[in-house]
Image 1 (cartoon, helix red, strand yellow):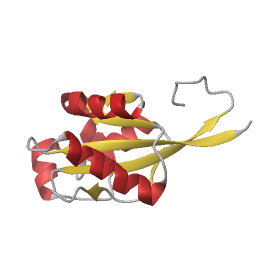
Image 2 (tube, one colour):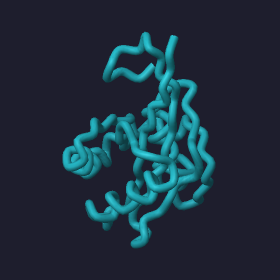
Image 3 (spheres, rainbow, N blue to C red):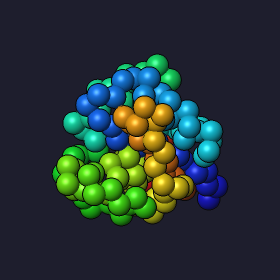
Length: 135
């Protein structure tokens, strides 16, 4: 079985975030960890990430908001924990979207306007995994 790492970029952002905020967070993330294969967002935050995915030609995966608290994160933001039940929305989304066995490549990165965060997780894809499906 041949394997390839699939990289998923997860996002978290404030209501004041713009598409430029998300794009810059993704650029910073990809500069550090390489290109994303897919983008991901909590369902309640998906529309803006979908727009970014459409402009980049990347599939966007949705994660149920209620699942965020179940993911282990590297960052432990008290503000995020109070608002969303997780230490980092971006890290939780990346891990949950990448699926079981996924690993964060590092802590979230923050856009320069401090309105958006992005984190990357990867999971090994086997030759037996159908295209378009996470294991």
